[in-house]
Length: 278
Ligand SMILES: *[C@@H]1O[C@H](CO)[C@@H](O)[C@H](O)[C@H]1NC(C)=O
Ligand SMILES: *[C@@H]1O[C@H](CO)[C@@H](O)[C@H](O)[C@H]1NC(C)=O
Figure 1: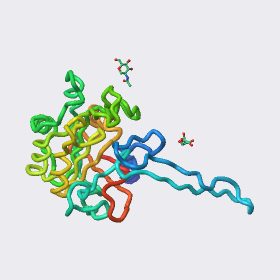
Figure 2: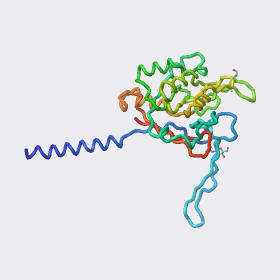
Figure 3: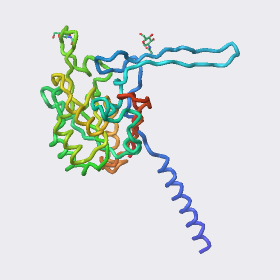
Figure 4: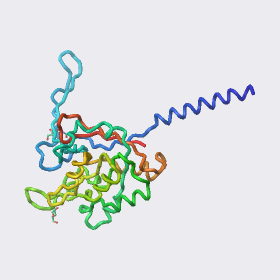
């Protein structure tokens, strides 16, 4: 008995340490691209990303001082489209409720194989049957979650020509070519699964070459559902978490997301840090 009690105490201490370690061992996935000269912007906006190194060096008093300015359009790099972008009554970027962005459940629908086995990957659109197939394999998409679509298009980042899929022409208005979401799938996710946000690893939730029509933007905006465009690193989550099944037990639907857009009053969208864990 005298030897047994310290053993129990030791076990409790070890167990407590393991619990603490597992809490702090959470692995975060950064689903945002860094902003720099390579950042790709949706065409037709005024400014690409620019960093001005206004102050950088030792002052006369002898201390180091660095302070920069930056300039950019709202819709470039990894960014959120606020509902107001395509809906007059929609929330602006600063008005999106925190409960739609902080620690929200998230699902990744992986359609990379469908996209790249197609003879024309740039015309691929997510359809309802892709979502249903995903649910059969990974479980029902939780209510009030963010759905992220992995098309595999991020392999072209930051090659602007390939990523935006400019048609090989000398037109001053280049034709865009990249995959996106169908209006049917967007409606299904809003009506049947009550999503709060929709993200994709391409320049836009609507496909590039759609005759200038943006039905998914308009529909989601009217439903107060924000978009995330140019989502990065989804393949890392899929490879590390979902395929190996180590961290999330293979259950894709228990990912959690932090969507943190810059807080600009009245903005239609803006650069966003996105972190995922499970
Ligand atoms: C980015 O581009 C600007 C303007 O062309 C240039 O002055 C700057 O050195 C570039 N920065 C980097 C990190 O390449
Ligand atoms: C356009 O097509 C021509 C002929 O196929 C090719 O040589 C050229 O590299 C292409 N240009 C771009 C920018 O893709």
